[in-house]
Length: 128
Image (cartoon, rainbow, N blue to C red; front, top):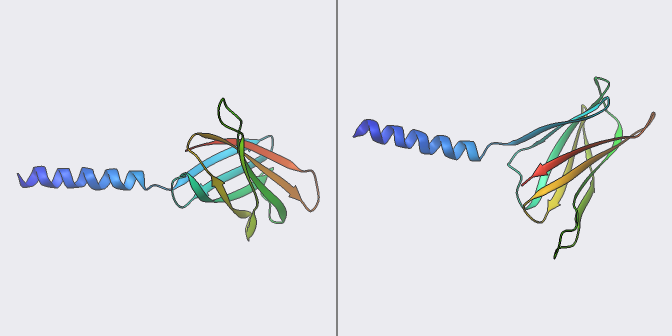
């Protein structure tokens, strides 16, 4: 009986930790890459994303970064979007707080405007 209880508690604890795992995703377009993370799993409402950016393997340290999420219109529901200018945290990391008002598949565009060079856009999806 004690062994059964220990196994049950271990499984319960493991399931709880698995659900609380942080969010992490990689996205790429041409020679620009983004490593997107969040301290908590993505949920409806406010989400803080940290994006680490590289172009041609080099860290993008000084750029204007905009995070834009949107869900297209569907029958009986208007289009929804959220757009935020990300704060430069240094070392190629940028942080933005996006509002995702409902569950579903959201498109995320990361718009990167460096001080010098061409503007880049990385597209990916977020599932909530």
